[in-house]
Picture 1 (tube, each protein chain N blue to C red):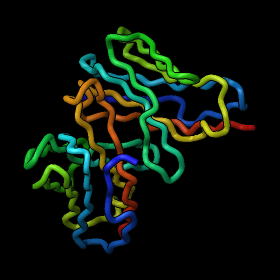
Picture 2: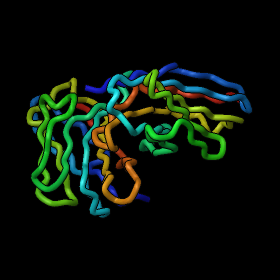
Picture 3: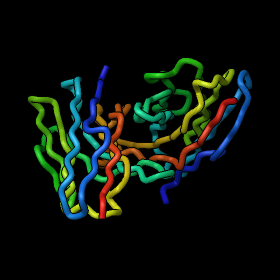
Picture 4: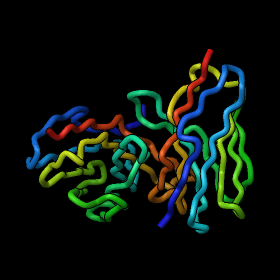
Length: 111
Length: 115
């Protein structure tokens, strides 16, 4: 089955700097790669996703890149703000079914 | 917020007792999922359902059973709770057949403590 690895497990950045979180997946059939943000005590919420027919997707300060050959994808957050502090999860699946999640990255933005 | 609710929000139970968690949706989504969240493990799939009375096991299904007798309700049962089942449980819904949206919507979670 699918296996998703996520790095780093914790990331501290200064406000205004960029943050990058990386994930690798094992199943070459996977074609859907979402990213979720989870604030303390809250539910995970979808912030951006990408499909295998696209190499990059942007939404304001966040972007996701996908390298199908290497089977890895990354989340990029630019101009980080304190409200970006949260746990971020990557995931992979075939057509959105049975998402397999990475272990999560705790992002701390220091002001 | 999204039309998905979980109950109870918090529960403390004793080892060996049965426990049922409920997920209720008003979105008429076809797919429903139960995940558990533990530090260092992310979210792991317990069971899922693709429709009424259509369920299957996920990655960590041992000790859990599910039922879906109506589109809107997906029940997770711990037949005999153990301390290793202390966790936060999230229900999620999706319906990839609807347009181009594959994303999950999660419930608020149930924090279960087995003592």
